[in-house]
Length: 71
Image (cartoon, rainbow, N blue to C red):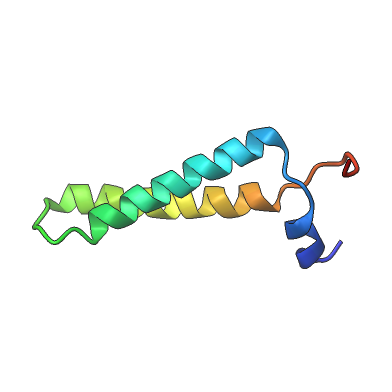
């Protein structure tokens, strides 16, 4: 299975939910990092980890494919 085929096959429901949570984490972390106000260093560090974790969760969840054929 090529990478393109893997990303075009259907994704199971659980991983769709996990992907959406990952997108939300990455978006929230990115918004905190890009905030135009000065924030404490710990907040920026946590936001950076949120962004990385959300991006990884989104990519891994999108790569999971269902074994069942398309209907």
